[in-house]
Length: 226
Length: 226
DNA sequence: CCAAAAGTGTTGGCTGTACACCCATGT
DNA sequence: ACATGGGTGTACAGCCAACACTTTTGG
Image (cartoon, rainbow over all chains, first blue to last red; front, side):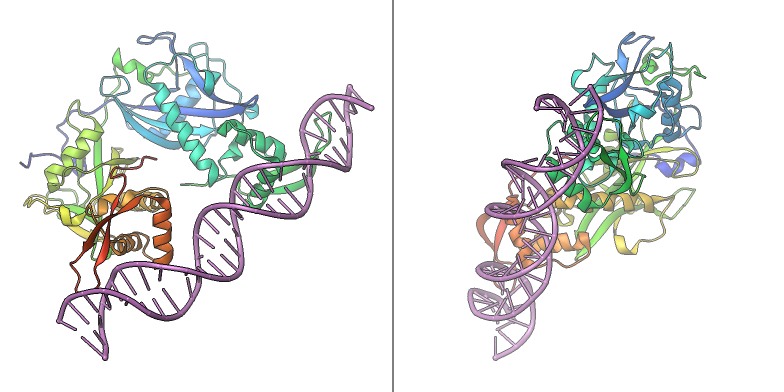
C-alpha cells in the first residue's frame, strides 16, 4: 500500500525524480473608456502562432515564480511597478501537463505606457470582446475576474486603477465597469465615505467643461491582503 | 531591453530551459474534542529527520499537482475521498527554490481512519499546540486557517467536518472550534436556518443522557466553490 | 439657455447582536 | 432532585436599496 515516495522535504538531500516545466501567466486588468480591459501579447511562434495570449513564460533556473512573473511582464509589455497577486496554479492548460502559476494585477491605464515590442505587440482588449486566445487563457481570465469582483466588496482594490487624485464619479465609473452594472450615485458615495477608505484633498478637478468636482485620494494607497 | 525568453506556450515545441522541482503539500483539518486539529506525518529522512510535517512530496513524471496531492495523502496517511481545494503555491519554503503547491481539505475525524504507516506515523495535532515543524510548514497552516475562517461566513464548508446527520449544537461547536470563540445559540440557529443550508431530518439524536435533539442534514452535501 | 456632471437626505426593509428562561431526559 | 444540554423571542442598531431635484460650469 505504502509506495516509496519522496516528500517535498527530501528534495534538498536527494532528487532522483525528473523535474518539471513551470511557467507563469500574468493577467493585467485595467478600466478604460468605461470598459474592463486585459493586456495581451501576440504569439510569434508555434503552436498558436499569431494568436493572442496572456504575458508569461517559463521560469529561469533558480528563479521564483514571483520573480519570473515580474520579469516576463516587463520583457513582453514594458509594464513595471505593479503589485502582482497570486491567482491560482493551473495544470495542463496546454494539454501536455505543464504547470502555470497565474498572477493578476490592476493598473491605471493612463499611467501605463506599453512598450513597443515588435515581437509581442502588447495591447489592451475589452474583456467582453476578446479575440481567440492561445491555450485556455480564457479560463485564467475568468478566474481573475471572479477574484476581482469578490475583492471589490471588502477591499480597496480599485486604488491601483486610478490616479493618485480622482473624483468620486471616476471611482464610481470604475466600479461600474468592473461589476458591469450601474450603481446609485448617492448610495455609492455614502458607502465609500462610510468605509473611510478615501479622503478629500481640498483640491478641485477642473478638467471638465462642467461643474468642478472635489478630488479625493485613498487613505491607504497599498493593497489590502486577503 | 527585450530579452529572448520562452513563453509558456512554447514549452510544447522546444524546451531548452531546465525543468523544476515541484512538490505538493496537503493541509487536512478536522475538529475533534472541541479543537481544530491538523494531520501531520513524521519525517524519517534528513533534513529535519524526526520532525513533523504536512503530508506531501514530489510529483511523479507527467502527474498533475491535483493527482499528486491525492496520492501523497493516501500513501502517507491512508486518508481518501476528500475534496482537496488548492490553497496557494509557495516557493522557497526550503530555502532552495523549490515550488510547492499547497492544498487543503476538511474531514470528519470520526469517519476517518488513519492508516498505520510505520514510516509516517500519521497523527492529529491541535492547531493551537503544534510541535516543531519541518521547513516553514507553519506558514502553510496559517494560510489554510485564514482561508477556512474566511469561507466559513459565506459557504457550507463545515459540511465535511460532520457526519451526514448532526444536531445544531454539534454544528455550533464546530464553528466555535474553527473561530475559537463562543457564539450565541439563538443567533446561531437563526442564522443557519435563514441561510437555508440545512434541513431537519425528522429523526432525533438519542445518544445523550439528556434531552433528545433534532437531527439535521446539509441540503447540498458538496463544496460551495469560491 | 442648454447640456452635462456634481452634489445632496429620507424612508423602509433586512440583518446582526445582545440578552434569559423553561423543558426534556438520564442518573 | 439535579445536572446536562435542547430549544425558543424580542428589541435595538446598523446597513443597504430605492428614490428626484438643485447647483455649477462651459459652450
